[in-house]
Image: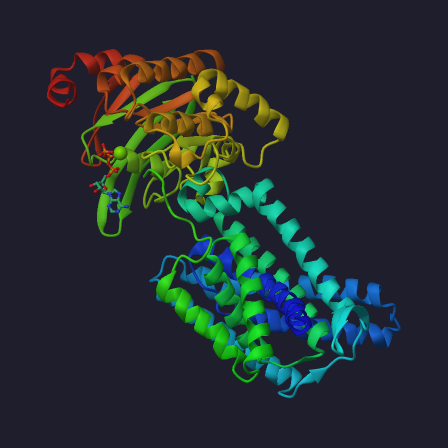
Length: 304
Length: 239
Ligand SMILES: Nc1ncnc2c1ncn2[C@@H]1O[C@H](COP(=O)(O)OP(=O)(O)OP(=O)(O)O)[C@@H](O)[C@H]1O
Ligand SMILES: [Mg+2]
């Protein structure tokens, strides 16, 4: 019981990070119907940017943790947003209107390019960060097994929930959000209403990349160790989360993220840690076969 | 009367297919001009080409003194041109309210709220259905929404592509009356494509006949209504 509760806490934490990344996949897919395979690598870049920022701030003597983390978050999200915009601009926009596979191939190329760039710039070995948010609560104890809720897990959950809330507000209530949803439904009509479709798509990449960078920062803080390859693994899992939740659905991305986080945590806890990735990817295959529209995928009932 | 829109030798293509073959057309400020022609003549293409999608390949499109033919669509539309396009193109997964707001994108919110009230006066049906999803409206309601959305930007030039399509005669009459009233009271300039040529020619100050991507006739509404070849092609035989 205690052990299961601990896995639940760990799974939710992990799921939050996946959900944050999954939102980027889902948004981009929703608007341009393309799977942005480089998105996981933007997450990885975000993690490195966070590490660089934290190291830099440390050298400047800014060691008050909340301030350092806040500045890091702004820095990583800002630069990653620039990456997101640039990727869309150079790798996808020129291919819009081309055959369907072209942007997908371009995305895979972009993903490899980003990985290699990080490998060359940062080295292939794991980079480590000492624990910045130590400690936590002892929730309860059973037969000597202590269920822990760490401060780090609380921070991850609070930051994720706050960002997702902000983001949901943006999409459902603001004029930018309406423009994004309009592009998703009918780009030509959207432009006939005086909206710059390219700019709207660019901003979607910018926002998705910023969220991925925050996920990268949280990942770095949680695991304390990153390398140029984390984007692939986390990316595929977040993608699985998006598919499971129903690509195009925002709440779906979060629910999918939580589901994948929980599956991974319980699988590692009760079956085998070595095969935890296999468990997550099996879910992807099963969902794609039996539930291609996912949990909250939209059933299109509309007049044409 | 000053010229608001002038097309000079405009051509447009879909791939290798030429849909417009050198269109010359003038719309004066404050006029209602109608475009009639058989299915596939290029009427909708002409409306879309004015908006830059597809963009004109040759010729010039002068709107309010500026050549707009090479501008991107959104920049053209920001010059207070609005289109209620063929097929309505309502945002199916947005409410009526949101669809209307889309029409006022980028404008200020107070003005949008006022304009929306005017649209609701014109189409009370839309007010009743304010929170219903666009995709679940009836065809006629969608048509009202498409026109209302176009009006939300307070356009100077309104392009209407078959606004009465799928509407009951009474509703279609009401829409024509509303267009006329807008034109009279606010001086709104309208370019209208209509299947119902009699109704359109009666409403319009002037009309153009489009055949196979080229203009073959033009004149005042009354003149065109009186031409026997028009009667034969679009008024009696056509329906
Ligand atoms: N997207 C497109 N791709 C290729 N050809 C097109 C496209 N849209 C229209 N066409 C062709 O261009 C020609 C003109 O079409 P258009 O839609 O402008 O006609 P229309 O006068 O509006 O007809 P209708 O009265 O049926 O609405 C037609 O031959 C049509 O097949
Ligand atoms: Mg047409």
